[in-house]
Image (cartoon, rainbow, N blue to C red; front, side, top):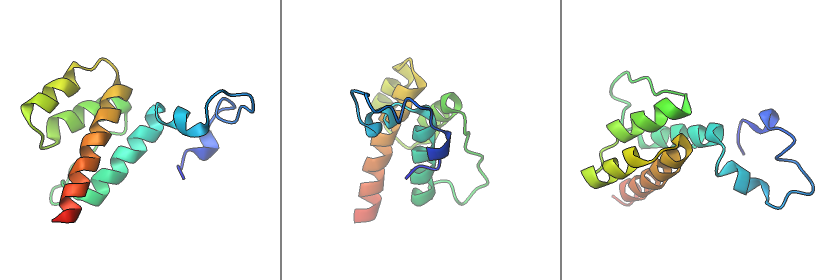
Length: 105
C-alpha cells in the first residue's frame, strides 16, 4: 500500500467512478515517484556513492533517464516523451526488467 493513501483526494474514493483505484494510481506522479525510489533502493545501483535522488517527478524522470545504464535507443525514447508521468512509467518498466535480471543472476 502506498504511503500517500492519506493524501488522496475524493476522486480516488468516488463510488461512481468508472475506474478502480489502481487505474488512477498508474498515472499519479507521486505514486510513480515512490515506486521508482523503491526499486532504486532494492537495486542498490547507486549505494556506493552519496547520490541525492530527486523527489520531484519531472527531475526524477530526467535523472533516471540520464543515470540508468540503458542503451541509447531506450534513452532516446525516454527523452522524446513529453510528460514526466509517461517517462516515469516507461522507466518503471525498464527498472523492473533490470530487477528481474539482477535477481536471476
